[in-house]
Amino acid sequence: SLSPRVLVASLLASAAVAAIALGARALALPTLLRGARRGEAVVVYRILAFASVAGLLLAMTVGVPPHYLNAAQFAWVAVFGLAPLLAIACAEWLRAGRWQPLAAVVLLALPGSADAILRLGFGAPQRFGISRAERDLCLRLAQVSAPGDVVFEPSMLLDTDRPSAIPLLAGRPVYLSLLSAVGTLPAEERDARYEALVAFFVGRDAEAARAALVSSGARFVLVPPGVTPAASAMDGLEPIADNAAGRLYRVPDSATVAP
Image (tube, rainbow, N blue to C red; front, side, top):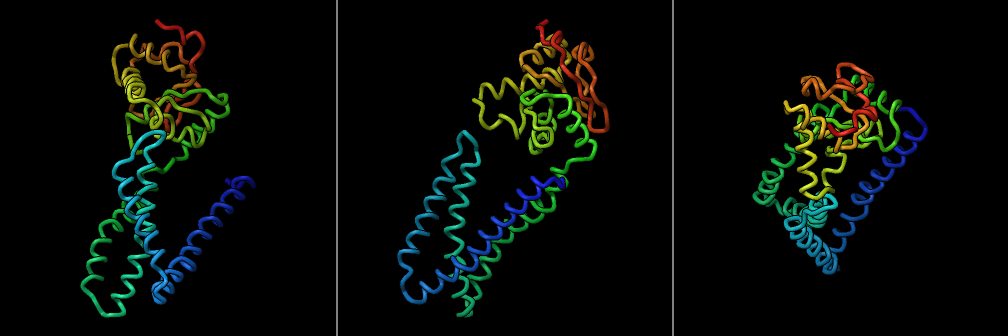
C-alpha cells in the first residue's frame, strides 16, 4: 500500500528498529567492554546475569493467557542478558587464541541460526504468503461488511500455523483463528468453536452444521477451495464473491434462526 498513513507508520517503525539495533551495537557492547577492561563491570555483570537467569526460569514456567508469547518475551530477556556476556567472552577467547570454546559456540549457534534463516526466513513468504485472489476476496469482504461482523471460515482446520488473512486485510474478526480469539479464550470455549468449525465445514450432518453456524453469530461464511460443507447446510446463504481463493457468502437474518 502507498497510502501516506501506511508509509509514515512504516518509516517510524523502521526508524525505531534501526535506533534500537544501532544503539545496542554502538552503546551497549562497547560500554560493557570498557567496563570489563577497567574492572568496573561488576554491577553490569550482576544485572545481566540476573536478567538471564530470571528470563530462562520464566520462559520455562510461564505460558498463560492473555497470550502465550509471554514465554517468548521472557526468553528474549534471557538472550539479551546472555548475548553481551557471550560476546565479551568470545572477544577474549579470540584475542587469546582459544579456538576450542569459539568452535563450541559456533557449533551451538548453527542449528538455531539455520532454523531461523531457512524455516522462519526463507520459509515465511511461502508459508504466510497471501495470494492476489485472497487479497481481492478480503477487500470485497471489507466493502460488503460492517466493522464487527464475524466471519465463519476454516483456517484453523486447514493449517494451524497460518493465520487467516481476513483480520489483516479486511479488518473483520473471524470465529476462530491465530489472529482472532484463539489465544485468549478459555479452553472449553476454544474447543467448542473448533468443534463448530468441524461440524460445518467437515461434517455431513446438515442440522448440526446449521446449528454451528447459528451459534457462531457469524454474518459471513468463507469456503476455501477443496472444502465442501454439506450442501443443505449452505441453503439460504447469499453468494457475494467467488474466485480462486474461495467463495464468500452472506448469512441473511432468515438463516440465523436455529433449525
